[in-house]
Each structure stands twice: as C-alpha cells, then as structure tokens.
Image (cartoon, rainbow, N blue to C red; front, side, top):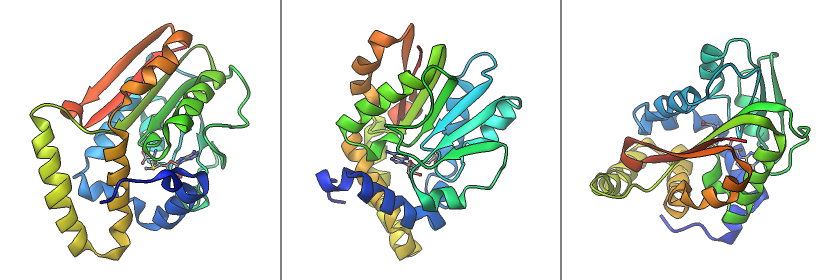
Length: 229
Ligand SMILES: C[S@@+](CC[C@H](N)C(=O)[O-])C[C@H]1O[C@@H](n2cnc3c(N)ncnc32)[C@H](O)[C@@H]1O
C-alpha cells in the first residue's frame, strides 16, 4: 500500500473516491468484524445530556444515524457529506437534513449546534484541512456544545504487532479473495497509516474549549478527541 501523496488529499480526489466506494462501503464492517459499529456506538455514548440538535459530520451513508436515534430519540439530526454517491446510498429519512457540502466550510450558522459527531471522516484530510475542520466544528457549536471525533489509528505498544499482522498480511489476503470491488478498503488503510492518531489536533482545539479529552479505544486502534466548546 503506497502512502497517499498530496493529490490523494485533494477534495475532488477524495470526493470521487467515496463516490466510487459508495456501493460497497457498507461491506467494510465485514473486514473489521463489526468493530466499526461498536466504535460508532461508543463515540455517540461519549455525548452527555440531551443535545437537541446533532450534526453528523462526514456522515457517509448514514452509519451513525440509527445509533444517534437510539440514544437521542428526540434530537434533530443534520448530516454533512460531500459525496453524492455516499449521500445517495444513505437511507432516505426525511427527518434528517443532509447537506452535500465540504465539512471544512458548511452553510450551517454560527453557534447553533448542540453536538457534533464524526466517525472515520478525517483520515482522508491533510493536516491543513483537519485544522480547518476543527475550526468549523467550533464555529457551528453553541457555547457549551460538545463534539466527539474518532478515527482508526496506528496503535503503539503491544497491539502494534497485531495491527501490522492484520493489516499487512491478513487484510490484503482477504481483499485479494474478496475481489476488485474492495480495492478502496486498501486505500483507506493507507490513509490510516499516514494519519497516525489524533494527537496533533489537540493544539487547534484547546484554546476554544472548556474541556478537551483524548479518547483511546481498543489499545489505540481507534483514537479520538472529545470536548466542550
Ligand atoms: C470513511 S467514510 C465515514 C462515513 C461514516 N461517518 C462512517 O462512520 O462510516 C468518510 C466520509 O467522509 C466524507 N468526507 C471526506 N472528506 C470530506 C469533506 N472534506 N467534506 C465532507 N465530507 C467528507 C466522505 O465522502 C465519506 O462519506
């Protein structure tokens, strides 16, 4: 898996990648043995209280929506994703407002969202886009609003060996037998390798947050950051 280059982070490139990936994206859970849904649920469980409106940033084909509705049945959900393909696959649910926009510059008004959730969205952004994204999250959140951002990451410590065995030996083998339609999965893994973990985001958020905490799930296989504006 070659490391992504600058062109692989360009908005058009990433949008097209997900447009093509959309029909088979729901199958990615098979390669993580359902871990992705466990993580989505855990991330949503990080939110406190009863947020009246929640923004699902980089919402894909709506993987978080069922979990958000389960936990916060009364919350109004706004979803943001720039991929036509992913939005088309998302279950049409008229109660959810879907904005087909770039997550770094949305049309959502300042200070109007109670909570932002983002699962597995930021690895395909370069550092500059990630910073712009953090500012956007802070811009749309109400003072006192909360956010949680989680992403697959490269673990440190003993789990690192297992990570390498799975992603460098087992996953490529599974994907080889799974066929061409799963080649996007390999690409996503290359983005995770380049992403590392969320540590670098902290500095861009801390000055505007009342509280900020790093999240680690599954020995660092997923890292995240949650905070209150
Ligand atoms: C790996 S998927 C994650 C989808 C979903 N959140 C999940 O839990 O599976 C990443 C999604 O982020 C979207 N995305 C990536 N960069 C974006 C950006 N700059 N603006 C809006 N959407 C973006 C892609 O279109 C894709 O649907």
